[in-house]
Image (cartoon, rainbow, N blue to C red; front, side, top):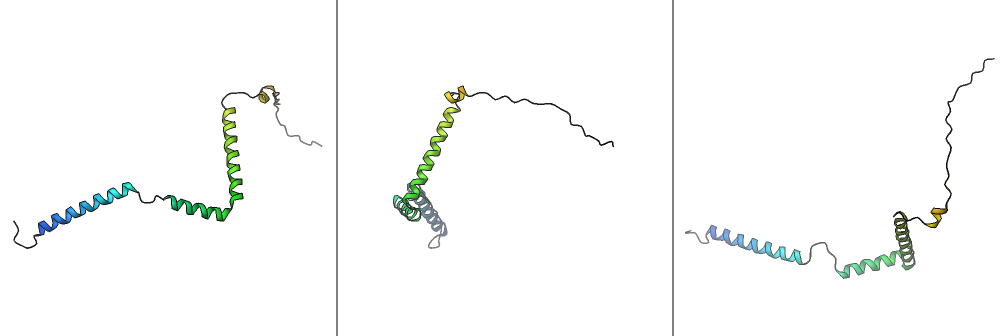
Length: 110
């Protein structure tokens, strides 16, 4: 087929095969551990750094505040569900009166 040694067509075929093999290998490796994911050791280091910066007392207070906010949100969602609490049932209804009038400008005719 080709008289030159090595034949350019064969060299091309071999390079295409090697590129395909490399791409398949890269694809398999990317499926096993995608780029950008962190292992447990990375997360432990981040946790230690956060603990050193903020301290455990401040983190505990943040956690308590967050828990209180979530609890308040859940209670608010229960109240908004249509259930009337005993406080809301016995509360007096305030009705306002609207007075409709026209404003007139007084003139001093002295």
